[in-house]
Image (tube, rainbow, N blue to C red; front, side, top):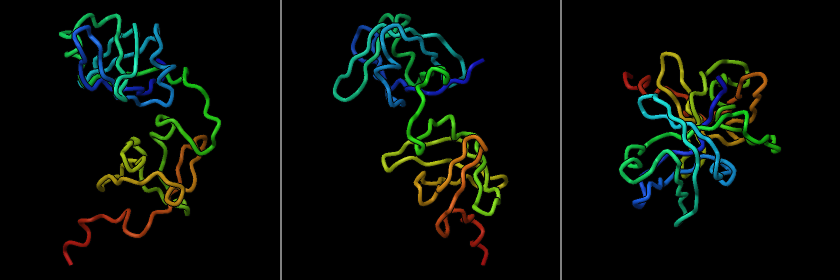
Length: 180
């Protein structure tokens, strides 16, 4: 099975003809949501379905997509929260050495410059303030690491690691100082 990446999330139904308002999670929505493109929809429960783009248009800053398999608003309402996935192999190569697809970062070892392993990058969160790496730490609470060069000076996808230079307190366990 090929690796798949999230390219959008269905926010809600729009109108009566089965259009879906999609929160875009790709830098190339005009390529991902072109008429005839086939995407995989994944429900919160993990079930998947095949969806074929019938039409897509921008409306008030949001992408509205109609799929051949979603004939009306009633059917569209059942797809709220659906993740829209595309095959990772279909993604265009990135020319900028400082840009990465989320799936390239997920699963990388998060290490300090001296090689001390901090944890594993579980996911990339896109927030209004910028991207955050969610780092799982064995036996400790997860930590959110701002994905900026000052804190993540090195990303080596081939070696499967990111190097962290965290500011003081970023990796501290907040419960450790409670019992002083």
